[in-house]
Length: 230
Image (tube, rainbow, N blue to C red; front, side, top):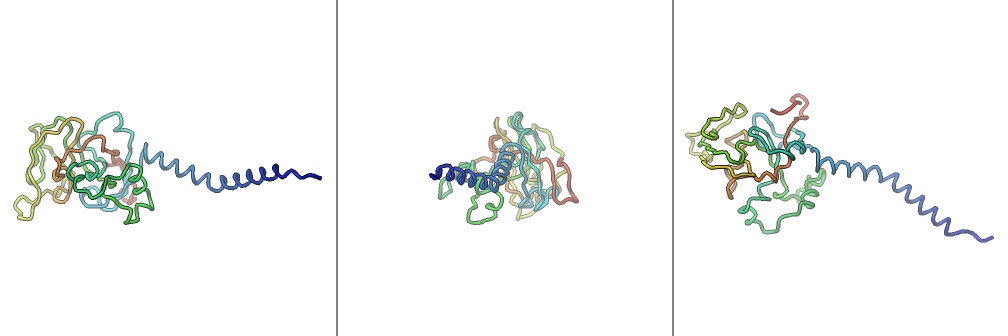
């Protein structure tokens, strides 16, 4: 009796495929869903420094949502997360020894687990968190203490408790008078005495709105300080 080897081979291949999909299909779909949500909707971020003290502390975990700023510009006072100045500041880019990493490479570098490997890090792929102080068209004055005047009006900033020491020889803060160009914002850390922000970026300090990743909305860790960000 002649055996149908082609049918047996086809069944073996189908069985292998079903077994493979049963094992890796859910994992693949989960990763794709995670990447899609992270890229388009929201993602979790943590605070790596003290530049936003006292409101945001080191290692706080935040939810950064990305939908609200698609159809509108950021507003004064909002806390935003944005791409590293090393990826858009022309003078910082000019100092690089290698070309800028692609968006795809940065997405891999910042992917959880991979981001913990120091050899894969690149400052151009980092993200920063600051507060929007002035928007396009605003006339801005910042004194040596870090206090702000916008469009000739002094701004009350209750979230700032650590201004620059105006009479200290170690004070590195600087006074600035400028007008923010359209399509850009000016950002500062709440910890005015210890924040590398728009005051210090060498090419002018204006953040292009296209570099904004999203708006920080909720703190989910630690649980004791869970809640919406003002």
